[in-house]
Length: 212
Image 1 (cartoon, helix red, strand yellow):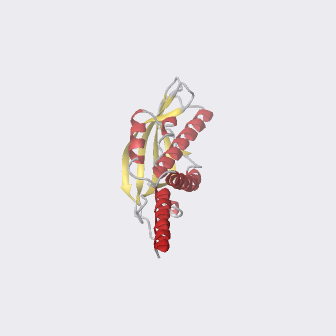
Image 2: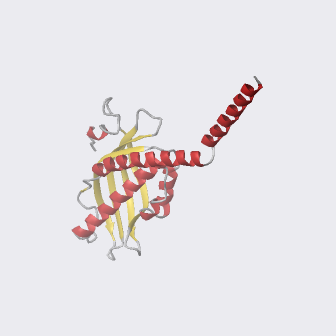
Image 3: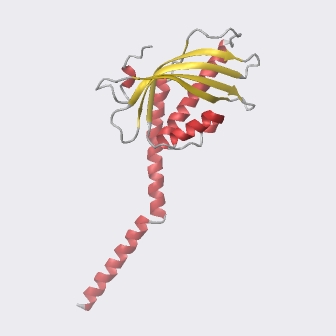
C-alpha cells in the first residue's frame, strides 16, 4: 500500500514538472516562435492581396504648372509609394514596425508607427487609387501629389469594417541612399462608404463602386 502511494506521489510530481516545462522555458519560446511564423505566413497572404489592390495606381492629369517628371521617374514614384503602402499593411497586420523606416520618415513615420501600435491583425483594403501630381522639384528630389481612393479596414475582432472614400496629400523625398520615402501625408477628405452585406469582407470589398 505504501509503495503504491509512493508511486502515485512520484507520478504526480513528474506530471507537475512536465506541466511546468510546458508552461515555461524552451516550450514557451517554441510556442511563441510557431505563433510568429504562422502570423508571418498569414501576413504574406494579406500582402499578396494588397499588391493586387495596388497593381494599378492611376495618374490623373497633373495639378501643377511646374515641369513634370519624366515617365520613368513618375513610375519610380508610384512604385516607391506602393511599397510604402504594402509595408504599412504588413505592420498593421503583424504589429512589426521594423521595416517602416525604409519607406517612411518624419511625421509620416510617426503616424505609421502609431497606427500599427493600435492593435494587431488590422486588415486594410484599398481600391481605385487615383494620383494627381501637385509639385515636382526641379532638382528631382521632392514630389507632392494627391491620392484619392476607397478603403475598408478591419481590426482582429471586428466583423464589419470601417469604410470610406478618402483623399490624402502626400509628400515624398528622395534620400541620399536613393530611396523615396513618404515624409508627410494629410487626409483632406474622408467620407463614409456603406458596403453592402456580402461585400463587407476583405476578399470582396474592392468590388464596391468607388465614385467621386
